[in-house]
Amino acid sequence: MDGPAIALRSLTKRFKGLVAVDGIDLEIEKGELFGLLGPNGAGKSTIIKMLTTMLKPTSGSAIVWGHDVLRDRDAVRSSVGVVFQDPTLDTMLTARENLDFHGRMYGMNAERRKNGIEEVLDLVDLAEKANVLVEEFSGGMRRRLEIARGLMHRPHVLFLDEPTLGLDSQTRRHIWQYIKEMNLQEEVTVVLTTHYMEEADNLCKRVAIIDNGRIVALDSPENLKDLISADIINLAVLEGHDDLLQALEPQGWIRSIQTSNGEVQLHVDHAQARMPEIMAIAYRHDVAIASVSMHEPTLEDVFLKFTGRKIRAEGGGGAFARMGPWRRRR
Amino acid sequence: MRLDLYAIYSIWQREMLRFFRLKSRLIGSLGAPFFFLAFLGMGFRGGGAMMPGIPEGMSYIAFLTPGIIGMTILFQSTFAGLSVLWDREFGFLKEMMVAPVSRMAIVLGRTAGGVTTSIVQSMVILTAGIFMGVSLSGIRGFLLSLVFMILIGSTFIGMGLAFASRMKDMSGFSLIMNFIIFPLFFLSGAIFPIEQFPAGIRLIAYLDPLTYGVDGLRYCLVGASAFSPLADLGILFLACIAMLGLGAYLFEVSEVE
Image 1: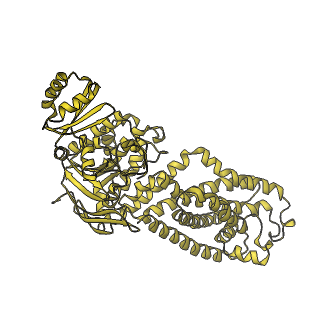
Image 2: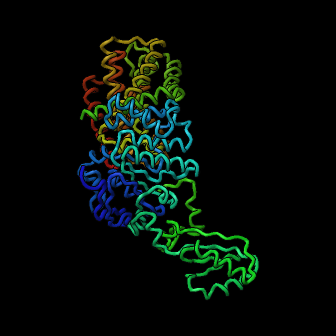
Image 3: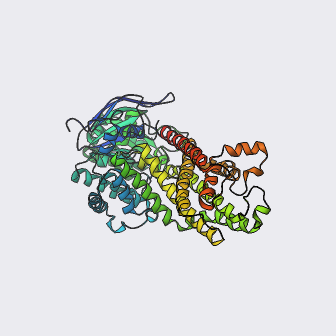
């Protein structure tokens, strides 16, 4: 097939007057590992549902692997694999039976199914659990099995909707590993949605930041982070807090200074090079510092810059803590 | 289309795997019809003498057994239709909906599965009836009874599917159980002749597809019926097409936004 793996032209979805996806233009190349990053309710899952023919767009067009999602539904379905946000396994069946059912639904013959099952179970390290009822699987194993199933019919494009939602950080890292491996080995184009900044940063070659159904930024994670030019330095000050502030204020290279609870936060360019200078100033003014930390800008900072907030205010609560590890529906 | 036949077969096969794996549910769902058969059968042993409308010389257990088979199919197949709700709740429905198979294949696969499980259960009840003294009218009647079982099963799977497509979750389940399924069962003449009803109620019984199903089963299995068996077959066939069509239509529109 020629052309991009996915091409969206002013793709729009309205639900009873509410605009969930608001005129998105986007092209995703073959073999890309692409991320849609945004908070819950930004419209990521709605985009995935339209691209997998589960929802009809209100207007605009979407071409997936050369097929129109409205006109060639079956061709689109045959070309893609999907791992949904909520579990979609039959827990009364074994891993093998779930995969076998999937293969049949995609018209694979017995031999192709048999080989396919071995191959994908190997990829996600579940070969030994093939004949165990899914009921007995842990959350991480279920997710891996779903990813394996999504790959089984050898789709050209694999959609992963929040692939690590609700999993502990160790399992999450494992799953990242699997996603990277299959993107390389199977040459499958991967489109994933996530609200974990870390996930998009770790996995994706390109990221679209989605907010209120629109793309607010689109680039590689590195380029996006470069947009936030300053690094961040945190100083925990024990003594001489005010002296330090006075001494730092005249320094032209400091972009901004903020304080809270005895902690001083500086935004500077090239933090690593400036660190000795800051230490020297503190030393000259007899300031006692308990600890120093610095971090490079994260995608979270980028999100903040583009949307002006950390997460949509859903009534109080502390920013990302609310999006915690427990599962939420859309 | 070939792919779709394969999909229908696969969905049927999944239903079989689940049905035979859940031994407790398999036995549990047979409990109610079995006890109806056993206790009503023992309690009304007097038969025709006690209950006008039962043909001369027919024992009550012979009258009752086809009725209880109808009941078994009514319950089992309505649940099979409603089980779309479970699949939606546990997410598996999406797995089927996103596959390159038609909605109709999903409906037909499910229908085939529900009909098969209904017939398996009916055979258990029929065997119990034979042990309790029912003698079958013949092999041709038995084979024809399978046709009736398929039609009754498909009709109520269609009904279950129609309800499931209109419901968001399982909260309406007991409402359907108590206000739809039980009245359909009692109205059908499964446990006593509908001639016993007052005229107004009898009219409602005539609208119940199961009435014709039970009457047809009675003709096939024990050789007596209130209506002409051809009329039973015809009316049930029309009801089946209508219900299955309605169920398939509502299912189709409910899952696409």
